[in-house]
Length: 160
Image 1 (tube, helix red, strand yellow):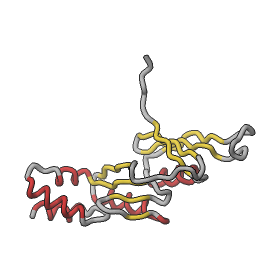
Image 2 (tube, rainbow, N blue to C red; image 1 turned 90 degrees about the horizontal axis):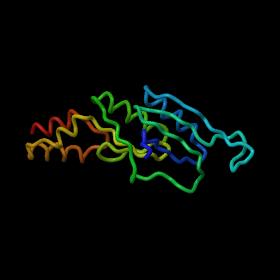
Image 3 (cartoon, one colour; image 1 turned 135 degrees about the vertical axis):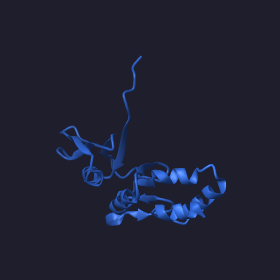
Image 4 (cartoon, helix red, strand yellow; image 1 turned 120 degrees about the vertical axis):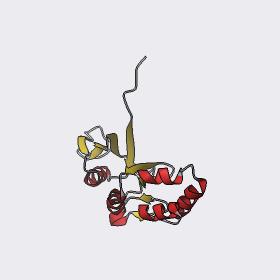
């Protein structure tokens, strides 16, 4: 029996795989770029053009694939960024919504490539999951009214 040693998430792009990998590496400071695979004379793409770019961010391995226009991203799959504080939230929100990204509700957004992200301060989960149901309800209602999460606003709502 073979043992799986980890997962690699493959992201399908229409000719923008290298641009996407470079973008994510600029957003996540601990990232690193891996191998770039190029088409050879066997095709199906033009010889020398990028097929895939391997990269790693926050310990997660990815492959950006130039697969063509057949498939696009949707909110059915998203990546959650656990943020230590409001400064992390602000950084990721600004970077990922830049240059054509779209803000969404409750900490969700789409980046300029259409990939969905959840930018979540770890404390938020504690506040909306509090055993004090009234406090948790107030915090949850506050979160529902937000795009980018304002942690202090959620804290105030939680406190009543």
